[in-house]
Length: 185
Length: 185
DNA sequence: GTCTATATACGGATAGAC
DNA sequence: GTCTATCCGTATATAGAC
Image (cartoon, rainbow over all chains, first blue to last red; front, side, top):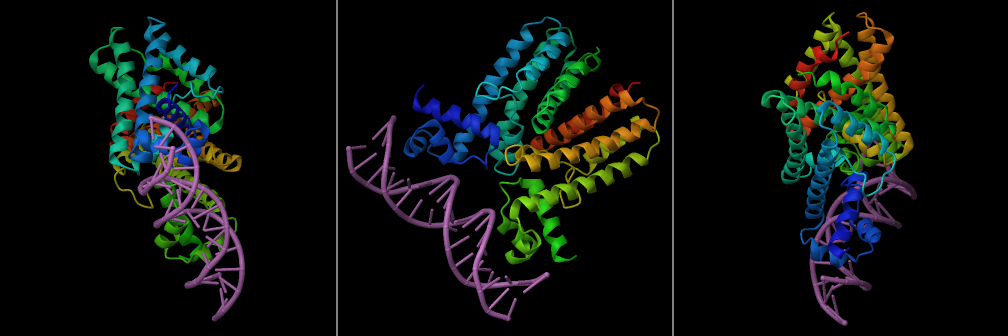
């Protein structure tokens, strides 16, 4: 792994876990064992450029994981339910591979800069579209799929948030159980 | 309004809007026009004691507002739907009276201290119980009411979060429309 | 209880050698 | 491209007069 990647993955992990303001550049360089000069060489515009890059990185990575999980089951109800139960199963392994939420970062960006907020919205749209495609390919109407993919996005994000705060996966499981009722045609 | 209250309400507004780490004590004392000495007189343990007090204050205030809104309609489906549509209507008036979410603060507290995280959980339990009481008093079984009040809590919190990030109330309205389907007995 | 001045540490950012 | 030393602002917190 080169310096650029090392900085990016370390930053992604820390930003996602502790948030933008709570994560210092000093912490990132220490954790990734790269000197400060390198950070500013690779990200000349400093912290804001770095966080934008990490948001995009996490967005893409998570989107691929969602896609992969949903492909495991042809029935969308079962696929999405299993996906959420899988989130619950992996919930307590908090490492660089298990980041499924940008809620904290996204809420912080609202009062940091318009440009960062837009970056987060693009990520959410990407995820929502992944649910949408699954619903469409399973015979849902375009209208229904649009509405339901937004609701799915909301419930999954919300359940992860509550689970993080409570440090307890009850809400994730409860949401998974609600999927069949929500996804009535 | 006395000094104690002035500090508390100003802090509540800023913490809720920008988060814990992004809000400096200097900003709070400037905005509330109180000297720093007074802040440390009233909150000897500094920032963490202050934020704990604001979380409790907001929790109670919002709980009373939820109670009030839900009491306006005897039918729980209609009451909760109207409550959410009301949130959407007031969404763009962001002042000290319109704070309906502690998501940002709660997510931050996860990596600040156990004690603050517990304080946030107590607030969420308070709100969830308010939905629970409404459902019980409308004839829902205890089991059903427990399950549904958690889902309601999740969806309302989630919808506010997404609305904040998108600066758009579409999700609040979409969730309001979903309430009848969710609250089937 | 109120207020100001100050201590101390850490934040992001930069300069310049290699 | 890599690394260290350093600048400067702001953060929380405190001391002590009134």
